[in-house]
Image (cartoon, rainbow, N blue to C red; front, side, top):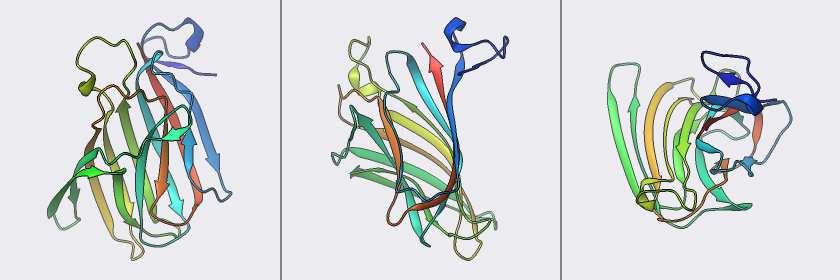
Length: 193
C-alpha cells in the first residue's frame, strides 16, 4: 500500500490528491543482475524518487541508471551527466559527459561490508500530451555515496538528462558496469500530479 507523505501522513494513496507517495520498498539478500521496474505511469507521477543502497558482487564497479519505456532500456547515446565528487580531505573534482548510453550515478565501489553504493535519485519523466517543450523532461538529479574497495569515502552530487525530446518513460533500471548485486535495499516514491 502506498502512503501519503505530508501534512496528512498515513493517508492511503487512493484518497491522496497531492504529495509524495510510497509506491514500494524492496529489501533482499539474494544475488540479482540489476534493479528494474516498469509500469510507473508518468501520467500519475510528476517525479519518481529512489532511495537506497546496493552491495556489488565485484570490486570497482560503477552504478548506472537507465530510463525505460514499455519494458525496454532507453540506451541511445543521448545521456548527458555532470557530477561533483567530494573527498574527505576537502578536495573536490568534477566530471561531465555527453552522448553516453547510460547515466553514471557513482563510480568504483567495493564489495565487502561497509562498502558499496548509497543513493537518492529523483527523476522527471516525459508523458505524451504534457504542456511545454518536450525537451524539458527525462532529467534527473541525485546525491550518492560510494565506498571503494579500500574503504575510501566519496560524496557525489549529480545531474543528468536523456536528450530525446518526446520519449515517454515509464520505468527505470539501475545496473553496474559488471557483475551482480549481492545485497540491496531501496524504496520508490512518486510525486502525484
